[in-house]
Amino acid sequence: MKLLSIAVPCYNSQDYMEHCVETLVSGGDEVEVIIVNDGSKDGTHEKALMLKEKYPTQVRYVSQENGGHGEAVNTGLLHATGEYFKVVDSDDWVDEETLKKVLNTLRYMVEHNKGLDMLLANFVYDKQGAKHKKVMRYKNIFPNRHITHWDGHVKFRKTQYILMHSVIYRTQMLKDCGLKLPAHTFYVDNIFVFHPLPYVKKLCYIDVDFYHYFIGREDQSVNEKVMISRIDQHIRVAKIMIEDYLQMDIESKALNRYMLQYLDMMMCIASIMLILSKEKENLVKKKELWNWLKECDESLYRKLRFSLFGIWMNLPGRVGRGLSVLGYKAVQKIFGFN
Image (cartoon, rainbow, N blue to C red; front, top):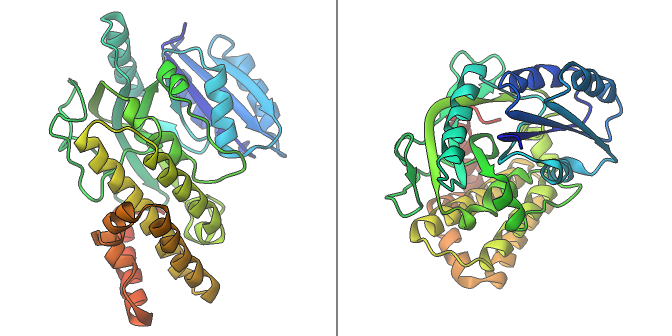
């Protein structure tokens, strides 16, 4: 069995997937890289076969009809044989020296039967052309290199989130919790992170800059124009997460607080993209989204509607929407997230 399985969803990735995979295989034979070709129409298939031939003990290749990013992650998890599982998008990469530290930590956990469910590391917003790269760290939340749990004085800042880039999950835990991402849907990485959290009993954070999250392609899903054009997808994911949350049995108060914060962020992003579109029909959709939440669960609605983000995204009138946009732009400039 491998120590770490890494799924690499690929769609028309011929121009950058090789760099991604080369950084992953630097971890040696403990690493299993599962390239999932999600119905690409370029040279992704040929590039994947080349990498499989070059690294026969590390690279596995699965080709499927187009099902979207979520279906590619599902396929990667289905084929994973490693003790732990991570997703790395084909236009991103990992720091090779840090990968060795990550593997050392995972190996220790397995050899000493620590039962670790989740490993967290820092990730870098590697924005094209930016002189200073913003790093998302968690050292104010979790002790470095110590196993902890959700009630270990866990308190996230409003700007801190566990994203797909920062997390490694125990493979069997992901399978046991029934994680299955919807097909043909963007932004499902939020579900990938969110759904397993109540199943995580032991977690560990290492203060190393591991994952490089590339931002800069015009067709990238986090590009602002693309996000606006796909706002219905974001709304769908937000609703799935809210419905999921309402069915969960969350024992930890600290985890519950964080998951509410995550839903707060999802509603905030959906709202600001609807505002940024400047289309009347999208302002109607924004109102409908909040009304849906109120009808779904009034208690949760009050918590999110009257949070800082909820108030900020629902300032009345044209002036209020303008202030919402100004606040969003200020945060965007600080973090460079799209």
